[in-house]
Structure formats: structure tokens, C-alpha cells
Image 1 (cartoon, rainbow, N blue to C red):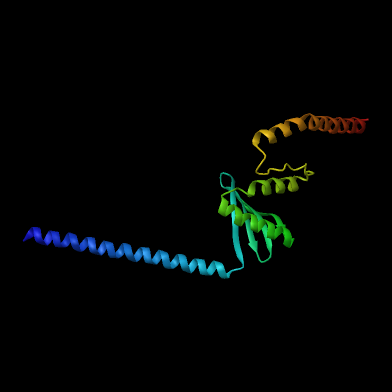
Image 2 (image 1 turned 90 degrees about the vertical axis):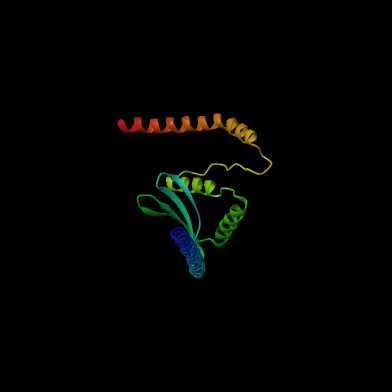
Amino acid sequence: MGQGSNLLNLLNVILVLAVIIILIVLLIRFLGRRNQSLTSVRSMRTLGAMGLGPNKSMQVIEIGNSLYLIGVGESISLLDKITDPVEVALIISSFEDSSSNQKNFLVPLISKITNKLRGEVPSEEIDLSDTSTFYEVLQSKLRSAPERKEKIEELLSKDFTKDESRKL
């Protein structure tokens, strides 16, 4: 009789464990659906995020008809606010396309923002169409490198002459 009761106890424990697991799964599904309905009602959604380093990222958030680019690190800071409806629609459609195609749309956006924050004049953008290869892009950049070097040397020489004239 001792073995029969042990077997019965084991089956009872397995049955109770299965019921608990089923209840946990149902609770997780219920909470997930509830969270989705709450976020769909809100006028705020996160379109995407990109890690920039350890504990640092950039988030693109849509609030109403505007997009906010938020830098998240040790502190949270607003990088840019995009209110132009055409640009907002373009960025949102790009995010939707990138989520279906798994392309990374944030890289050009981040470089544009960093240039804007640094006050740099945007250089000519490279057209990275599907037909251009890495080799073609590399060759075009290598051809433009001597021109850029001359521009940098010219700017440095102007800056040097300004510094020399200040010393006098």
C-alpha cells in the first residue's frame, strides 16, 4: 500500500503543478493583451531604439503628430523634435518598412542629429541605392579624400593666420 499512495501523491503533485503552470501562462497572456490595449489608446509610442554604447541609447518616440529623439544614458535628454508633417510621415513609414525588412534606419538619422548638434555643415550625401555596391561607395569616397584634405589644410591655415594676427 505504501507504493500505491506514493504514486498517487506523485500524480497529484504533477497535476497541481500543471494547473499552476497553465494559470501562469493565462495570466501572462491576459496582462500582455491588457498592456497592448493600454498602449494603443495612448497617443505616445516608441518607434525604435538603437544602442550607442554601454547603458546609452537613442530612442525615437512619437507623441501626437511630433517625433522626439531622446538620448538615454546616465541622464535623459531631448536631442531633437521633428514637427514637420512630411518628415514625420517619412520617418514613420521608414520605421514601419524597416521593421518588416529588418533594415537599420537609425544610423543615418543619428549621424544627421550628431552633425546638427555639432554645428557641422552637412556634406554631400551619398546615394546608397540598392544598385550601388560597397566598392563603388568606397571608390567615390577615396576620390573625394584629396579635395577634403585640401579644404582642411586651407581652413587650418586660415585659422593659424588669425591666431598669429591676434598675438601681434
